[in-house]
Length: 606
Ligand code: AGP
Image (cartoon, rainbow, N blue to C red; front, top):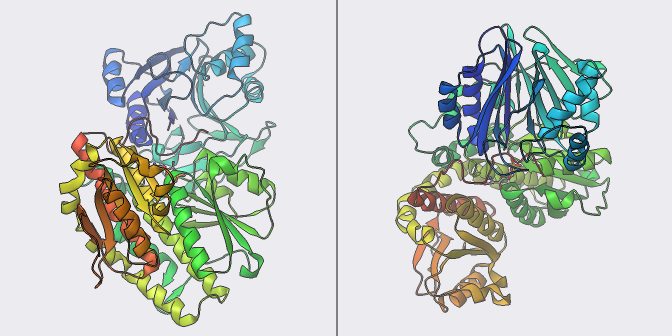
């Protein structure tokens, strides 16, 4: 996703902005640029490609200045190119922008009539010329407000001005933006991570707000231009979590961190002394919750699908699941007795945030299960359940997925017990099983050598399928997504029982098919579905769990056995080999594992 950095201070800012852009690389992008103000002149250097290409260009075109803005762009309007890279500048103003201006074509038409020339195909460039136009007639604050009021769509903006040295103006609607405070300088960033190397003193803008940042003061304003005060948060500045250590990729490190993530997360929610789940300050009485809707995108959506099986198994609640980009436009029948739960690692996904906003505006009960507790989705929800998995840098979500599953399971258990759907003995036993889970994940990680040895079948495949039933079906979806987003191989997750209704036609000789068949109530049925694909030539990788029963079947290409556990927790264990499979398949293809093509870590646009 696009990233923004701005610095205004007393010293030269270019190298510091460049460093911060490097920290934003994890978000996924395709071009980068910096603009500074020096001797009343705006200087801009930008290019397609990685930040190190920008760095080389800066060596040739060294731009100085004590105020500047930088940007890494993930293309929405206009292909990745030098000219479409941000910042976009005129003589009077330079702009960096995250988001989508939905009425940009209309605005552009009007500006062309006024004689403005456009160089790029971006929506952002209309902001530059609108600012130039309004600055002719209004003082800067009113000019900014006029410009903002003419925009439809989403934005996080950073702007510097030729005739207003030392200031940066930031504005936010639907795309996150933060202000950082430093010694004799202040900052603007698309998230706190962008500013972590400079400060951990942060304030966040809310939708509709804008700010005027000077090196010695920051002023915040609401949509009507009235001054507002902002809390200054002090964030944990634990830098060591942000490096790869001895790993080649963040993703590899984050997969192997999962036993600790599980241990920490369980410790956060389960009281060691009395073996009880503590969900402090839960703002509702469980009797007031008649049903639950789980909402998320991508991997977060898959965690919602798994949780549906848990809620159905362990509670009397009605539970449904929706993809956020569908939910936000659906003709919803929002209900007061429904708890709306939003799953998001970043807490900034635009569609999930919009779905939350819809529920908030209608006075619904909202709960966020997030990793970034200072994120927009967390800040705007009634109640937050953190997943405590530490920063997840790899674009492909791994430890956050497991932590989301864990917190969803913990919430299910707690509600199940409070609603007397399970007795105390069952409740306590399940909590004990949770406490053992990290060691079972640890043992399951040891399968990696075997997985590495078979991964090239998947990396060379024309296409492959992942099959499962029950709570293994969402894991099949997740395994397919991991393989798609890392090795760019077409992979489909499918309910095993659905194959004969069409997709069986895809099976051809040698096609790799992963069959998730833990020894649960679906086992025999899934094994029969497995036979159907083997009979048509599929190379089946069977992923099951250790147990005394043998697998009554032949012609299975390979079998992986995860540790035996409480059957509720099997989806968590099944995920591990699929993460490793995707990782090693991509490694064999030499792809950029932490920053796959076209993808972003946090999708802050629709
Ligand atoms: C997961 O591997 C993907 N990177 C993507 O599907 C991600 O889960 C999705 O964009 C949701 O992100 P969020 O959890 O930050 O909301």
